[in-house]
Image (cartoon, rainbow, N blue to C red):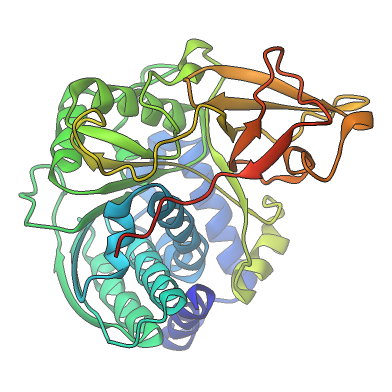
Length: 392
């Protein structure tokens, strides 16, 4: 269902684009826009509003970024009834900050449709989308994309677009707040390891205290480490607690080393045009790369919204297999806030612990028994961490 919704948005843009942009020209614009976000950020504000980059956003990034929202929301819903309940409401109000051309809201609608279909829901929900986007051309594209996604999802949608800077925006009552690849544009550029300015931290703290929040950022060292620092500030302030990806509320252990950063690398099924552009650009390996943070209002100590307690044997696998000879080694972030290098010898691999080898990066799992020496033995079991009970 989610893929069908995203395909419908891609088809809508392709048919509505006049004159049509050929794949080679689109690939060149995608490559340039990617460079602006990674190696030439000083030119980002000057160039990203060009016609070519708007085409890249609508013709490629709209369909390639929407699945990231689906993945983040599904993980948040597995950990928190506050997120899971979004799929049970008949009227949902979502605020999309820095909404761009609609990838985030389209991702939300795709997730909502898939989640409701899995639950066997038969009614038609009404989603109120409040989008805040400074660029007027992007704001116009947002409404087209959101309506196409809603039609494909079988969802009634009411769209309000405010063409303005999201800084200083007065939040209305909301069931969820989403912000994708927008905060990174506020980062200072004069530091090798930048952190968000205090006013940005205060702004996000207001969002996090207001409603369940999902922030998605590019999987770059600078933007991800800034998000990790922001996460620690939100938890320390007590205005919110982490729902995902973390399994604990302690300071992020990756921040201790300046070359570490925690991001996702998830297999997705690309749409036909995204796959075609990826082949031309040659920079993707079939995985969606992103960093995200999902929070719920209030401290975890006083807010019973995290669902079932996280067991002490829980881990989150935060690297791919490291390719060590004769064994599989992976860095894991444990439920106690410790970052550890765990290993499984090839000769001790069994069906019960094979998940440690084959699991996708980012999987939350349990290891029973938890080894004191970080070596998973042949008797150990490694199982996917079950989702919290659905209380709807």
